[in-house]
Length: 555
Image (cartoon, rainbow, N blue to C red; front, side, top):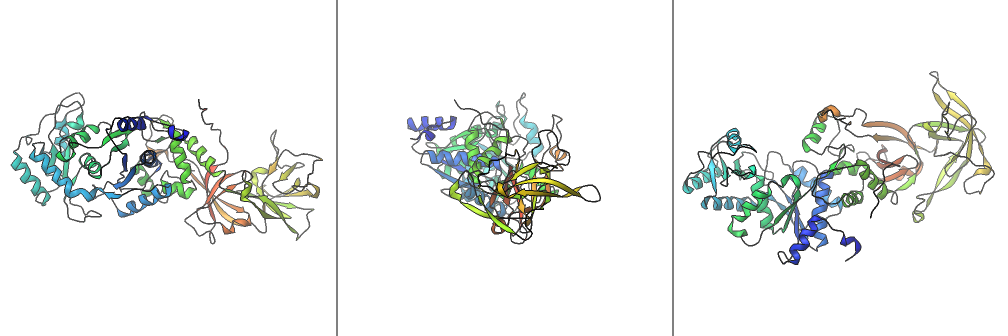
């Protein structure tokens, strides 16, 4: 076993113990999303835990869609979830659906009725809640709790046959109305629901509740470890109760283990909230790059490996905590630095005329594609009399220690020459629209020139050959709540997207949708997948180039 494989966590410690004691002979996990929305980075952690755990022990993982609520589910989500898991680099052993087991689930419900462990209840949802009691007061039994087995079997069959209206009846487990765990106070197992299912159509009009369907699905598939997030910890009691009371699972059954879900700083991953953003036109869809959805992160230029590395870095714990967003950005930046081609693009352009450079002359200068990986080669970049630089690289009245361009100052152009600013041109409003410089031919990059040094180095693009492009700059979609407890919709950042008209070097005319580049001195940017780059070249900022975030020291 390698050093990497020796890394452990509390889940793997439990599995190691059960394997050593012979309680289990294999590891089989599952990822069970409900197809009612798109996956987000929080799901990525659950995907990682289930697939990485199975991989560690040479086991298998199923992808199972928890499609027991047809009013919220759609094939669109089924397809997108499969695409996202494949994009992350994982392959499931079997593709399953909760609806595959509707017939078996019904028969297991009948078995519980026959054992006197389930009954048909006619209380309303409000009455059931009232009868259940509170954390400090016990519940009280429903007046329908002691119906005969025969009557419960008949009523349940008639529910299935569609003889009753929605909310007229439910099937409940008969456990303990005084249990300190409210989950065990006769939970609902089945409800009536007249809705067409995306796979079974109108075959069923009763559907199992999650707490009943989930343990059965795991057990039927032979799952050994049901790994789920911490909010299901109290529900483990009903998970175990269901399997303990069915004959088919008297010998072997899965074990549920809970882990802390991912809470990312200043990021909301509620599907309801994300859908509100879409429905209210705040964002342009599930794949808007401002969202934490996997398709949004993909469109933004985040790599699947960066997400997996992030999940590894935060680890698997039992206690809830909030993870710094800066750590996520660090992992994205760290993965891209050795993969992305480094190019020059100007986001907020200011024109520069090099007055002593020959008119009409264009020379091609060699520029490395990635200074940290020379195997990526180099390219030839055109240079001439007119170029664009970033507006922020020139100041009319510079502050102290400003080393970029101002009247009389000299800087180095990346891969090119020293230029000195001599003059500026303003429009009628007093805004600088052009600066005029001279260059020193002896200072060409690679010439070995050492007679004088400059403190500032800036990027540029050759104006005549530059490609015009749209550049989307993203900021967090939520403003800090500053402890005032505002609703999420009241914290929407009106400046979460800023669209700039910029220029990039001509080598990007061959850029493909989704391709990520490092814009020198600016950050990482992905070619937007919503447009054909040949017709409308648009870049989405993936992450800034630098951060103050420091990984904690090990050991």
